[in-house]
Image (cartoon, rainbow, N blue to C red; front, side):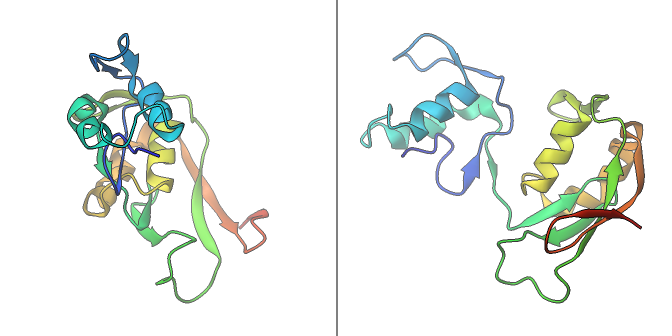
Length: 153
C-alpha cells in the first residue's frame, strides 16, 4: 500500500492531472488507486508525494467539520469522543449547487460536505464554512442516533 500524499495525508482534488513519468498522465484519484492496489512499489512510494503536489494533499484531521453549522465534531472512530453518541447536523437541500472554494475553484456542495464529514477541512476553517455553503440550502436539523436512523427534529 502506498498513500501518494504520504502517511496521514489524502488527496482533495481527485480530478487533477498527475504527470508521473512512468505512466500516461492520470488523475489524482487514479494515482491514489494505483498506490492502494500496490502498483507503486515500496522503493518508489517515498517519491509519490512530490508527484502528487497538484492533488491538494491535506492532512486527515481526527475531527469532522459540519459545514452547514460551522461546528467541529469528533469523528465516530475517535477515542476522545465523549458524551452523547447522537450527532445533530443540518440537512443540505441543494447538494448539486456549485460553490467557489478559494484555492480550489468550483466544487459541488455535496463534495464540500463530504470533505467536512471526512475530516479534510482544517478545523480552524470550519467556522467560516456556513457563509461559503449558504447557496447549498442548509435546512432544518436532523439527529443521527447510534443506529444512524435519521429523525427530523
